[in-house]
Image (tube, rainbow, N blue to C red):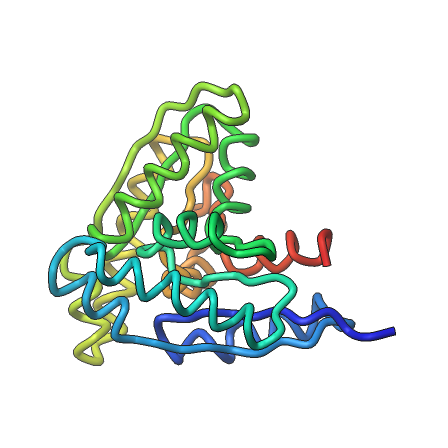
Length: 219
């Protein structure tokens, strides 16, 4: 029997090994290929929003993944989530934004939901998705958003320690106000591993493992 083909679209090459490892562990019968275009996220950051021309290129990349034989496509960047939903309308195979399974899990777990990011361009789309997935599930949520100012620039300049300290402090503060926290960026997941048990007062959800767990149920 032919193996299912999964196409992954990334906006950073650093995410390729992350998802490669997850897919190898959780999707043993699935053939995976990657498309990477970091100009997409760079454009969003420079302009502070997802522009129509950038969204159009996301749609084109998804079409290219389908043309390459993907039977399921997942886009691993939350900042371009709205464009992923548009792309899914034009594709003849299922298209998933990486943060949807995480959003569904968060709204199912608690009413007081926190979302945290180091980029405003990622925070807003993820918060919007949480509200809309709550509406789909017929649940009311009280959403608290937190932006870690300066953390992203620190990480980009090679100062991972400052990034981790800022994110860790924000997570500790937010955990006192909500019952579950959703990480808007996969890059923050490693900070969670460094938190003590007392600092992790509530469940903290990261999108990559939850997304691949979801794929395992449908592929």
